[in-house]
Image (cartoon, rainbow, N blue to C red; front, side, top):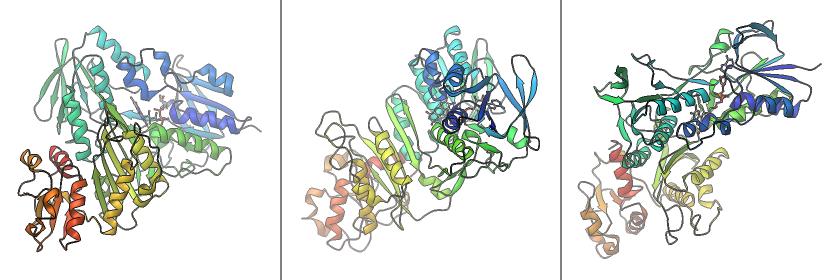
Length: 551
Ligand code: FAD
């Protein structure tokens, strides 16, 4: 007998589950419900629709109701809201939002992919006209309408995470003057602050006002305009406010049905996407997932995991043994010509989880060979286990080549790779694409050198308290333009002759502009009995740490 599979939520996770299940089971009856007017639309494209980079709304529709019916024999019922689950009777109560009619639908298997809702803070004025969230096509349509009708000139984006930054970029495309306020002292909170600093600097250069460490207090109406009042007493007059302060799993339906909900508010599932009721599966933004690097349950509202989980739920329903391996938090954002991204654990995430046995290398290579025109710097940070050299995380920011490096490292992390594997990775190289020693190879070599004791690392965060001798091995003209407080300048080119000037009774912390000359100096010194440690990433990293307020 054919099974009846009902799916709640018809976008990333739900639509993937439906289509995959049909490929595995021709006999199942599959019905997809979504309370919105569309299924399978590109939420990730919405900011670009607001920015008119995507100007035709139809481009956002990945698959239509008709396509689901004709190609997959799947019934799509949009503008239908799932209201209640009766688990004992295996019945889903559904309301047709057009007619208001309610009915009971029997299921053998239920899949929940209801997503996550944008958080609307409990602040005065949050519902005023001109204040928007961006989750659906109608949301974006409303913002587009408001921009034109009100002839908007200024916008305030509340929240500096990836959706907020994408909205900022797109409002700049629409020639608005944009201010981003962010409660944390940095943009892109999943990244470490010093890695987000170049991104913030770039945005400021491109005319975006960033007010970091400043949260939303309330919103007031002022004639035709709005005033955003911040918790630091700021009053920002604006024509438009976009709220993007994060999302909350839509777990109410599951919770009301008595399914187990986790500490982070998401539906608890096993590695086959089964909830605490074996007849109910859940996927996507609404669930908690295991971060395989840190070993904790997290909410990770991203499209890649949602799609993969939808597929895995379908495989489990079809009787296959596929399992979800967990997540590692790979994410990327592009803003006004700069890209920033992260994979695996951040340094602050590790510290929060009580992990301290890790090393960190910073490097600032070109994205391809320096002799080929147009090389742009990539700022790269790689975090690795001091025990076995396993790669724990990486972050990168730059104008070109960031996605490629992070994807290579993300794959290494997934395979349980070490920094030695990274050093050995055989990657594409021709001058316009990379370097014979690609930045990821160099990162692996640096970390390997640190682990082998060839390049012991100094801790940037101990700079203020260290008694070490600070040695700057750049040329005098570079030193004159700026250096660490208390540092002595002894250029690498003179170091062999003047090595006796370097003290042997304490640690010597060596740095240069980006790390390479310091490494050469460190090897020279260590082979002469000096306890030389490397300030990884040199003066460039110091500037980012300083800009981020980390030193
Ligand atoms: P969704 O895709 O949100 O789908 C859930 C659906 O369920 C919704 O249509 C909702 O209406 C419906 N629903 C909820 N409750 C009910 C109910 N009771 N009855 C019927 N229907 C219901 N991720 C990335 O990885 N990269 C990006 O660049 C990126 N950009 C993004 C930009 C924006 C503006 C947004 C909003 C998200 C972005 N994401 C991005 C996140 C990504 O879109 C989500 O992680 C992904 O869509 C989650 O899939 P899901 O199936 O869990 O939920």
